[in-house]
Each structure stands twice: as structure tokens, then as C-alpha cells.
Image 1 (cartoon, rainbow, N blue to C red):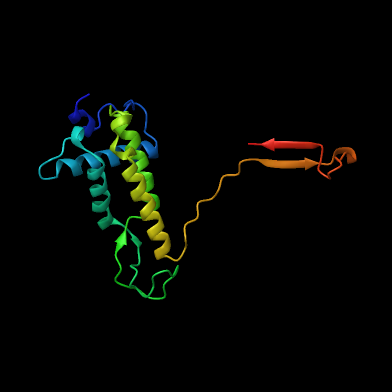
Image 2: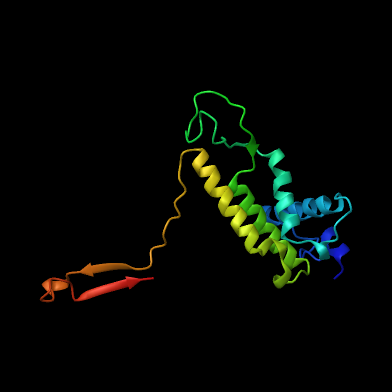
Length: 177
């Protein structure tokens, strides 16, 4: 498949008879928007030459359309979850929106014939950028981001018929993983 076909979105795998899901529609719209962004660069960037730097520039470009107020460190409302008055701090794209966007673009790239090994949306630099945005936005709102730990196993101790071991633990233990 050629770069032109990749950018134009042909080969999406969606038949014309079926109505695409909301996710598929968003993915196609995001893919077309990114292709449009690349074509409008001076000089235009072919998808085959696109790298993580182009993706990072695209994410920066999208900030101008954001709706999330991100307080700067010098702002008197920095670190306050609900500031009492307006300020001049910039609006940006929310981390969750960027994270979802990258997921859709990563999938679209590969669905449109791109190789997983060359996927610019799967780059380590993109993951680092998203982590920094998440942490910066959380601190600016005064809500430190804490990743929730996954529960590895749950022990349910049943004292069936009063059968306990000498150490006081139950002889019946069920583990869910």
C-alpha cells in the first residue's frame, strides 16, 4: 500500500454497508486530520517519512484547540483543584484526550498498512510525552496523579466447619488472579 493510500484512509477494513462504530468514526476522523496536518507542513511530509517528532509537533498543534486550563507554576491558582477566579493561564488538550487520540492513531496506522516496527505513534518518546503531560496537568490542578495498582490476587479464607490450621490460618484458600 502506498503512502498516499495510507494518508487518504483507504483500506480501513470497514465495508460500505455497515455503519462504523463511534470509535471507528473517531479513528478515521483522527487519521484524516493527521494526514491533513502532514500535507500542510512546509514542505509536505509523506507518511512514509513521518516520525515521532512529527507526532509530537501535531500534539503541540492540537493544544490550541484544547479546553483544559493548565495553570503555570507562577500562577496564584497553581495546585488548586477549583480556582476561585479566572486567570490568564493557557488552555491545552487534556491528557486523557491525547492518550485516547494516540491509541486511535496507533491502531489506524497499522490498519492502513503501516508496520508495527515503524509506527511513530508507538514510540517511546510519545509515551514519555504523555506521561509528562499527565503529571504536569495533575500537579497544576493540585491533584497528584497516582497510578492505581492492579490487584494481583485476592485471598478468601473460609473457615469451613471450623477447620483451622495450627497457625490460625484457614485450610481453605481460594486465589483469584
